Length: 135
Image 1 (tube, rainbow, N blue to C red):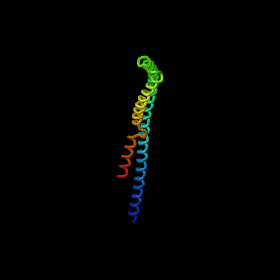
Image 2 (tube, rainbow, N blue to C red):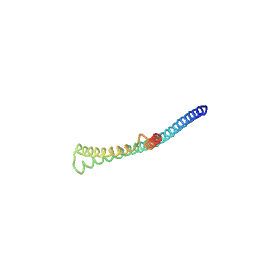
Image 3 (tube, one colour):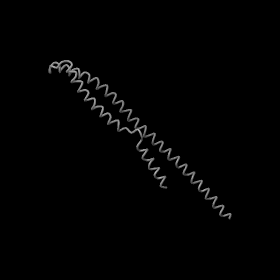
Image 4 (cartoon, rainbow, N blue to C red):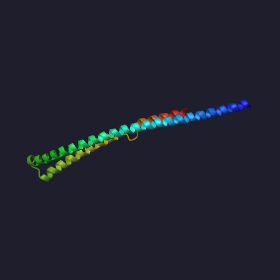
């Protein structure tokens, strides 16, 4: 009888130790995923920041250059093609609008490449959860 009680006590202690190990392991795993999540978000934020600076600089320079170019094209159309001022500006406006739409589509394509949710962290968390549930 005493041996049976002692075996039950050992089983309970083993179960408690196992539960503690699982809790510590889960805590460590979540901490590791949290660190990975933070690092991946930081990388994506840095990429977005650099892209924004480059886009801003490029946009300002394009605006300055395009302004002078458009004025000179209007003057050229008036002198060489014989268009009135309004017609020359309309041609320039239409061309600028088409180029603007193309540029907006290219920017939209680039913005889609930025991942707000960290893909590697989500994938490794999914693998960890799969591994835990299959144990």
